[in-house]
Length: 73
Image (cartoon, rainbow, N blue to C red; front, side, top):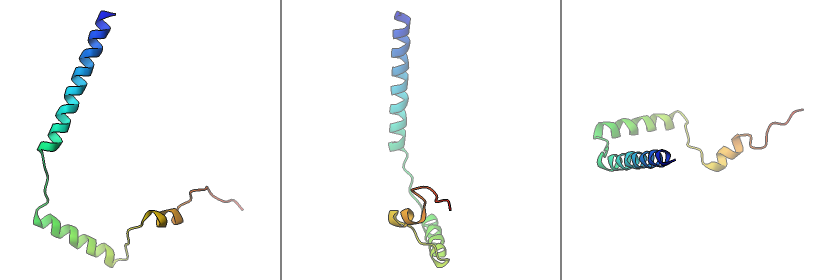
């Protein structure tokens, strides 16, 4: 019984240490787009809109999907 408690405590300590490392790593490593990436994103967005792409909001999505199942005739 005592070994099980020690094992559980060790598992919790290791899990919390891993979680803390993952959280700190996310805050320490920042990514910023350079100007070339920003230009490519803008060009691709312009190309999508030129081809008729429009971003749907939730109301448009609810109109175009089946939320109540399919009707059978």
